[in-house]
Amino acid sequence: MIRIMIKRACGASPFFERKMEMQKKWIRPDHPALQYMGRIDFEDPQKPVWVFPSTYVKVRFTGTGISALVTNMRGCWDNYLGVIVDGEESKILLKPEGRQEILLAAGLEDREHELLLFKRMDSCHQLILHGLIIDENADVFPPEPLPDRRIEVYGDSVSAGEVSEAVEYCGLADPPHNGEFSNSYYSYAWYTARMLNSQLHNIAQGGIALLEGTGYFHAPDYLGMEYMYDKIQYNTQIAPEKPWDFSRYTPHVVIVAIGQNDNHPHDYMWDNYDHPKAKKWRAHYAAFIRQLRSRYPKAVIILSTTILNHWENWDKSIHEVWQELNDPNIHHFLYSNNGCGTHGHIRVPEAEQMGRELSAFIESLGPEIWED
Image 1 (tube, one colour):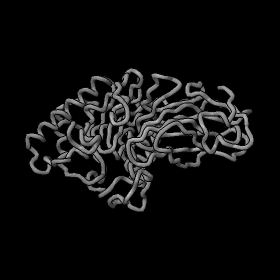
Image 2 (cartoon, helix red, strand yellow):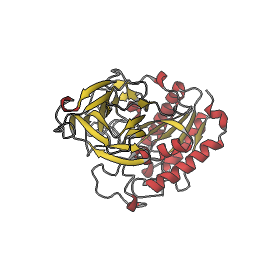
Image 3 (tube, one colour):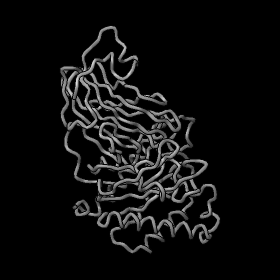
Image 4 (cartoon, helix red, strand yellow):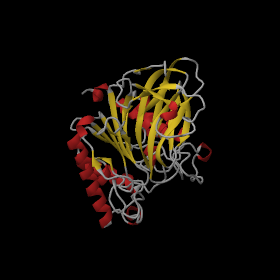
């Protein structure tokens, strides 16, 4: 933690360009009071890189306001960060590129507050956190410890909370948008983690399918979950790929929600359940689950899709793989309106209901699943 002069800090944004220079404190990203959650690139502890949705930093602070220094690296859409201060949520539109500081809260009562700064979106952008700025006479303190329970989700845009805030379109196709409705805080994945009082690594990417060359992510060279799952950076349109060190996080529960975008450009499951491509998909899906099992020998693994409309043969295929694997700690889970709940992305109330159903199923497996 060091003092800085606001007017001299990292360029000349409107927040820093004030007629009256004011002393502030800069909280470095590796300050022990900062609590992080998510698959984060900490190779440079002074420049942690956020890629995945639901990634966050949390801290308690005193004073009347708080800001953040960040660098945004845009791939597509407008890019927003989520902010929760003392339970009040807001979002901040980032500049498309470059280093910038963003005002998170101002005019607060001079007392202790809690900040949760989180990534609302998937790798449509990446973010470097350079630190936080508080009042000169303020201080920071660690929040409550992270929960002992740990969940990891492998999924697509539904798991990422894409277009979740378009609540007037429940059950309907998506409205026109440019990223403003996407919010991982209201994904079924994060709802489930909160309902179960669990940490979350949300390895979710809009448009992704299982296999390379299918789905919608990373056009025209489509990348699949087979490629993405073991990376910390995987969107090579923004940054070079980088592997993830699986020893850094071992989940008790792994949720695999893949099979929604795999029908593009050819829905071979609809054409013929025994199509050669359908058989190939099942073989690769089984191999992917075995890879996760080799990474996490003790974890409960839950196979699923979502309530977004899709042909039931995808769920039938997953069930066949589940039976083939014959692993007592692997389960196939279906929502009450699986595959027929909505024409568009899952909105806030729909995601909350998914979270209730999924968390209830996980709880039914017994408390022993959370033992290390």
